[in-house]
Image (cartoon, rainbow over all chains, first blue to last red; front, side):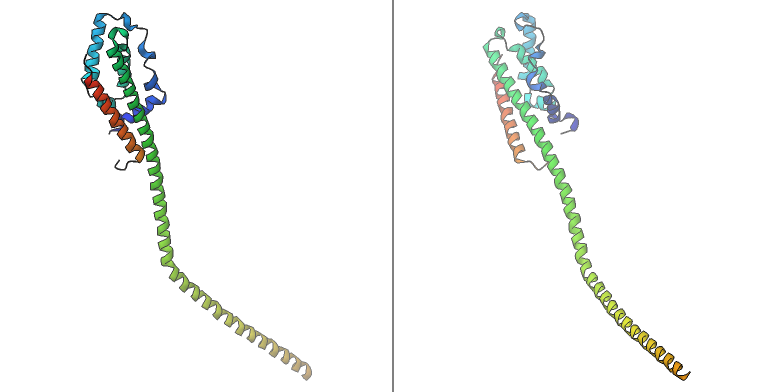
Amino acid sequence: MHEETNPIEKFNLMTKSGALLSKTTERSSNTSVSDLSETSKEYLLVELRTKVLEVDLFQAIEQDAIIIFELKLLLHKLNTPSFGSKFQDFSQEMKTLMDNIVLSFQQKGAEQSKFEDQKKLHDQLTVEVTTFQQSITTFRQEIPYAKQKMEEIDSAIARHKEEIKTLRLQRTNVLERECTMQQEAKLAI
Amino acid sequence: MAILTENEKALDEKLVESKNKLNKRRSNFVI
């Protein structure tokens, strides 16, 4: 279904304002159907035949939702005593059926929109999970190297501690020797 | 879209039902 001809979007736009379900009566203008001439009545019947009876109405609505206005106006004009109860019953039933279709298209549009939002969120979360899984894989790969590095560092610390201990000992020895030499020098004087 | 939610399936069924009723009422009507 192409975007520019998507009936659901058109229905959504029109039904947001309640246009499709409630404006027909208002749009019937000032014309009183009982005042229609025989020619006008004939014209309405021709319209009924060509726009309602001889076409796939559902497909027509699906392809171009805007025709609902025209069809409901036509049915409204036929819904008068001058056309008889047969036409009145037909008009009322058809209007109800068309309203149901409009409502279903609107609900389907809302449902699709909701589904698209959920799918978008799902895709986003999938990307996040994949990234996290990659981090875990990298972390697991790095753990053995990190352990080895820590052991090397610990070993270096121990080695340096030992060197410091030896140097401190040497320093103490030097100081003691110096002290002894100074005392011997004093005694010699 | 290949994936349909349960609600969408139900709405599709409802639309098909409405379509059948509409076509039946339309084809049964004789001027």
